[in-house]
Image 1: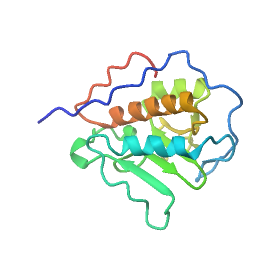
Image 2 (image 1 turned 135 degrees about the vertical axis):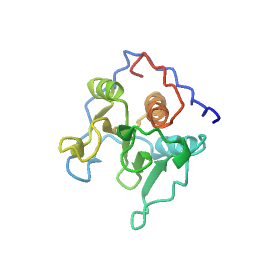
Image 3 (image 1 turned 90 degrees about the vertical axis):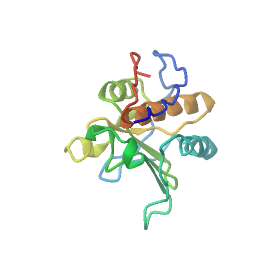
Image 4 (image 1 turned 30 degrees about the horizontal axis):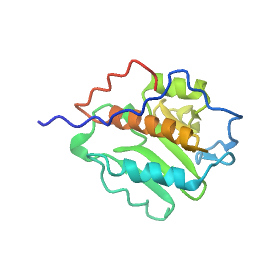
Length: 172
């Protein structure tokens, strides 16, 4: 079986902390970011790049949710580790109307993203309805934050792909 291509990480300092206060969120089954959004074009740029990665399947919005982008892997590319996915083969989801990013990350990476102010645990992780590494990643406010978000999308993608060694000794 051919080896899948690893998406190269964007270099991000392991001491990178998100500046300012955490955005306000509504915590519940639909856990959304309410404040602290940046230029929506930064988020759209990330989405455009990610959907061009190898093994990404259709990102058509969910039926009835036209402003939701589901980012999934082809079935043949998925690891058998269920904790690498939000649901099914989906490792990332983006709400566009109320800009919010959901990512399934390795636990160590999720921990550091939370501690450094980039994310918070998704509400449904507390009840075990989704894996513990699923986070609400705060949307980028500037180009530097876009690079960190891109690096975290990369971690999520590499975590979800089988036959890809993340080889990450740094949280991100």
